[in-house]
Each structure stands twice: as C-alpha cells, then as structure tokens.
Image (tube, rainbow, N blue to C red; front, side):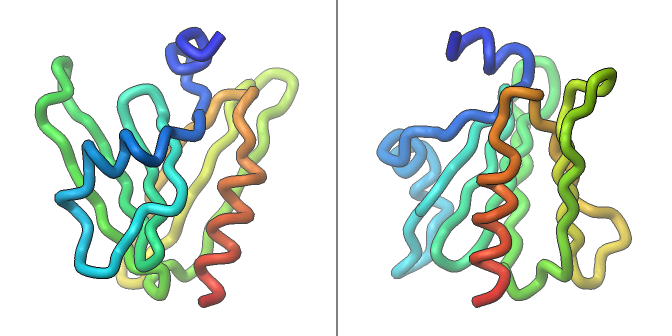
Length: 125
C-alpha cells in the first residue's frame, strides 16, 4: 500500500535517517531534522530551525528547488481538507514579503492534521 499511496499523492512520513543522509548537506550547524514528509517526488522537512520545501522539477527530477523558510517568516497557513468530490487536501503556507503562498497537495488518506499541528507548534516559537 505504501507504493500506491506515493503514486496517488498521499504524503507519508519519511525515515529520518534516510532524509538526514540524503539532505544533511542542507543543514546548518546545530540544526537537525525533526520530521519529514514525502509527497510523490517532493518533500517537506521540519528542522529545529526552519522549514525546507524540496521541489523536484522536470521529467527526470534532476533539477531541484530547495525553499528554506525560517519559522518566524511564516505569517499564517491554511489547510483545506478533502471532500466527497475533491479527494485532495491542500496546505498553503504564507510567507512574509511574498504574495504567492507555498502550496502542496495531499491525498485523501494523508494526515494533513498532523502537518498542521507541527506547523502550529513551530510557528509559535
């Protein structure tokens, strides 16, 4: 079921050891990965200092955008849950100084509430 969930877009919690091995070079001193979620090819990483949104682009996914957002720059966020006809949930994160929010889509089986709770916890620090 894990492979099928990834194919249809459900976010799944990623293995922290593997994420640290793959993306440890992005971390600053005294920074550590605390939670990570995989969305097909993309990833959302919560560290103790910031949010990192990884967006793999193109057909091969070799071009990668790393969007680093300090928690203090997040002005608000919005979660739209899945409905009967719209099976996807959406997360929008609004950043200070940017008119376009970071937007990610989660499949209906995803725990969007867990991601929202983590954001709420980190943004109050």
